[in-house]
Amino acid sequence: MKKNIFIILLFVISFANSQNLKTILLNKKYEIDFIGIDFSQAKLVGTTSDFKNPKRIIKDYFPRWNNMFHIDSDKYKLTKYFYKKKLIY
Image (cartoon, rainbow, N blue to C red; front, side, top):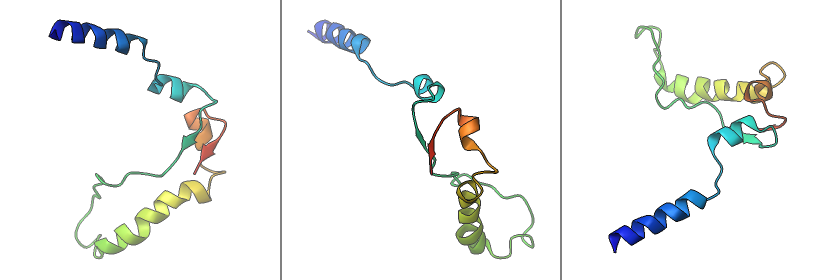
């Protein structure tokens, strides 16, 4: 019985038509939603005197750095680097 279920699953999976990352990234027709930079694993290098107010960095600088791609979109042409015609911010 287990062998039959396994064979059926292999059959279904082999004919499943899904998107893969290569198709999405290389096809210019697919649009990308650019949400921003992930700072969850960010590590800032410096001394404690360099970072006197860490909450200000999190609440002020991180959002500004994320918004710079949207505000200065002419300067940072993400469509060029992602090979896309359109990028949604």
